[in-house]
Length: 267
Image 1 (tube, rainbow, N blue to C red):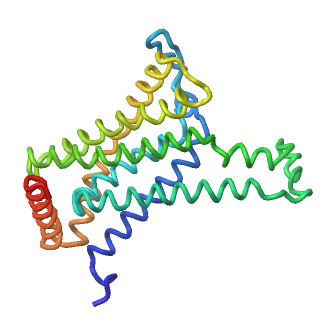
Image 2: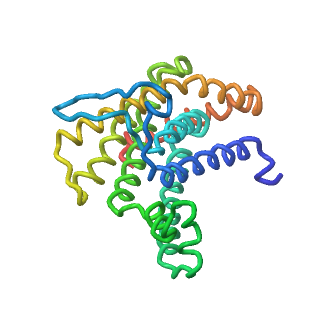
Image 3: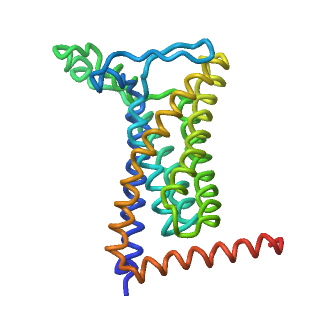
């Protein structure tokens, strides 16, 4: 039997593909800042925290990151910590490769006619616009990658701690709990590296205020997506069948017991 004949293998490929696509897209669309109030057509909301004021402006990447964390929980559920760590490291490699390709393309000498080809559309220098969109700052790239990786590893750990305490029940609790902790870390790590350590050198009150608002938005989005998690579980059970789904979960339990035994033995 070919490896792709296995339903579990095909499922992992689909979930990993969706995960990687969203992770990559979130990095690149994140260059756009959008107004949540204007998007929803509601009156501007001005928040004030730690002496810092602002509106509900976010990077477009926050639209996709909640889906990434939902997919993390789904993969965690059926393929365990090793599955999540594998795709997380692959995602980091893909993101680094994508940014390398973007910077390489920016460095290419533009064709003369192409530079002002969209002048009539209000873009006087398309090479400059291209560089601004795809050439994110180095500190932002580093912050995003480090925050993503730390968030993923923490999500895995918290997810399985809650699962050990609750068993197979309360799916929403382990999904929400793990996402709440990992998104908290992610929200502040990326801002600290990109804007406190980076050239902009935000003051700490601004860092804490913006990080808190971003975190609350991400947490709200994650909670809103809980029904999607249940839909995904239902579809997976229907696709795999109850026997195969149970087998995958049993394998995860046995693997965790083996790993705990190795830790206790000092191996």
